[in-house]
Image (cartoon, rainbow, N blue to C red):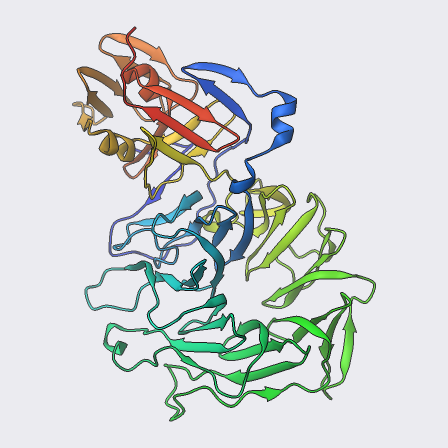
Length: 499
């Protein structure tokens, strides 16, 4: 059964690499509180308060058609493409993408995240341990797998991390840098290099990865670089090369790179690069910069005033100030899309939105978002006070919150059945605590016994992943449900209401 306003996209293994879908769903994000079935409009004062402080995002990283983001409460959320298992939500991959943030339930108390862009993702916990997830090493079972979040053995006291396609790098509290290799095939397990300190470098405050080149900024403002060996090369070099000083750069606090150049941000807020002769050259000298991020053939600048500028072969084809953004506190540069975090802790994005990598509905038929748009909410579903793990993202609309039906029925212990009449039309039935409801995809009516009840929006589905307004469970099964927009929680109580 298919519906034009489908939310979830799934596939069966083996996965076929297809062109990005250009069919998009209309979405208007609004703050609405539903209290025991009664819709209460959010007042202006409540909307201005925004989301709870602990739920604000502090970091976002843009991968190739996917995104990962870190909230202040230490939780990690991901969305976008999963064709190769890059977002790490399933051990055996059946879902090709998700259009909204999905919580990675195996990660908590996280302080920093990083991605290689191609599915090798890293995180640092508050206890200094390093965790990894994403695309799994190649196997011989003709099935795409993911690595679910797991600890990287042998790393302690980490502060930040950087990720390459087949290796990881960690900056420790003592200023030392450690690196390790990541197997690309199942047979690599015993041959990859385990975590070890990179010799010849110390007192580091920032690290950056560019292909197999590593850059480190030391506390004294100097910049150093070395190479990490590649698992794909036939080189006899198995350990990092000796770090060397990059001459011409001083008083630097961070570095980034694209396919053309190294960009260094100094402690006065000015960006420099090195010309062909190694001479420092100012980049956009009129800007006083707080953060600079580069990727592909462009560079993204965040000024101390909270404005964002983009130059080069940008993700939208436009250069200069990025209009349509609120005041920004952090930025991220991906090959195909850019993202930023507002001072209110919300994620905004623009550029290529194939596979919903920006996390919001594109408004152009070519799948591009030319003006920044706010990403969908990161919503938790709770049943009797417990967060329900789901590989499908709840979606907040103007009138309700759409939730994944099979996930919720399974968590409730309810019976879910798919029915087909002689004409081939599909319908669904949920039985719970002596109640039974029947509904069809694309319809806004449900049958509770013989009584028809209208939902605020229709049920939607694609390839078996069915989503519906939460009122289907509230009105149909008599559950007590509260939508708390400030806490971004849909709280369900299994105590059936007596009508």
